[in-house]
Image (cartoon, rainbow, N blue to C red):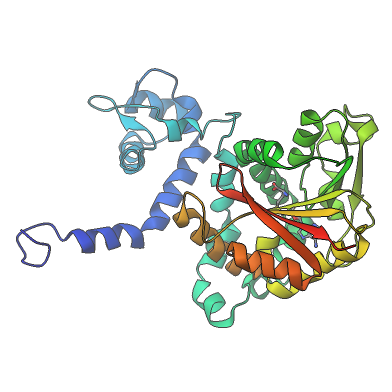
Length: 345
Ligand SMILES: C[S@@+](CC[C@H](N)C(=O)[O-])C[C@H]1O[C@@H](n2cnc3c(N)ncnc32)[C@H](O)[C@@H]1O
């Protein structure tokens, strides 16, 4: 039996069919989270009727949602008309350590559907479609027009990165480092983890002013780490008023096209003391456990911000064009690698 002789299921065509309707799965994940389904289901299996009452949904429609998701191992059928949690559905619960709830909501925010629908345009031009749709870049939009989505973005970045954060913090070579700057550090989750990891370390959180204003209260004045931490709000493509021994730039360069990334890295190279180090933490196109995730994120970076994922060699070349000397690439045991450089003496 072959898929071409008409006697069996057209496996290749069905696989493509499933891919073509991938947006249905993104929508199903989003609907499950918005309905509160992952939290309505406890540790024991529950019937569709019980779940429908708990989340105020139509039982027949909810059954369809659960069937679609359980085909992808998000929830599992546990007997007739009953469903239970799986590892993935547990990660959709509120407050779950390492959870993906906020990331699912961000991935399915209205602007995300808008920009994905213009991917062809982004591929033709090599540029983000965001300014054409919203009149400004993604971050300006999040800050000025949609602060609730901006807060969701920061939560999604902080929450979904817990495992990676831990791996980055323990993999970073902190020998001789007294002061670390986390550039584009968002809410400060990575910096906080670094300060917790090394009680002698000082840190500076650098990000756009409105992001820094919403940073982790523990890092702000009167917070638990206030005596070892400063916050600096600036646009790093223009300025970086911070002297540190190590500049960590995590999940930032992939948002940018080469010109913007070079402007930021040249700012770092200009302001940093000779001998200080710069570490990019990024997923690499040519390494890591999930090329599906990395390549899709590359397209998202393109369509949303004109950025891209890069190979290790491409990041190394960017660092060197900015006047930094790349000293190596360090795996962290996650999808993220550390691309290390030093400011020439
Ligand atoms: C994808 S988030 C990564 C946040 C954090 N480093 C992490 O790994 O979770 C990118 C961050 O870069 C910041 N950012 C974007 N453009 C920036 C700029 N020009 N100057 C400073 N920060 C910027 C954003 O506000 C955002 O917090």
